[in-house]
Image (tube, rainbow, N blue to C red; front, side):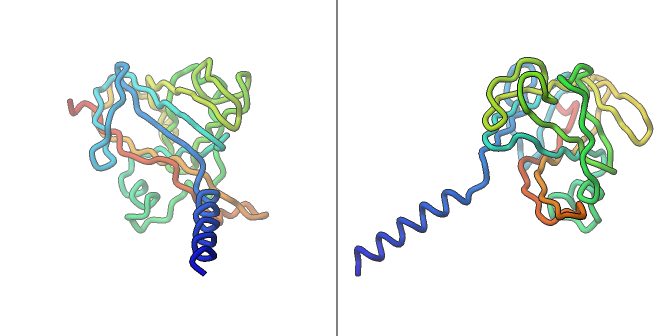
Length: 191
């Protein structure tokens, strides 16, 4: 009986490890140094920074970016607004991030993905395959789609909120499940 219980426990543990979410790691890099968050807040200088990605089994993902604290808090589950990102499909950024910008909109998320070296939304020269890649996305400016304005990072002195996720949709494109991959407040010029 004891052996049967141990075998059953081993099977449960094995099954639980198969059900874990895929490996997805994001770091925020500024001046070559990984910035460590304090309570999900990344304190940055008003200068260029990068998102560094290490991904396993996450070829593409949605990126909600806003200046609106309430929308962000609702997305991460601590607010009570309806999250418009979840109602809309993603907007694909330009190949290879040539403008080194981050789209900011409350209406729809951005869509970043890696298929191969010739089809991705990161800086040039990521490595790996669609199932397992390492990539970087440098940000020099924010593109505010609500007012069609570009804001250089060096001129930005506030907070921007980012929420990266994957979503499953039904046949009518209604979002039925969300997997949070990364979120944080990027607070500028506080150093």
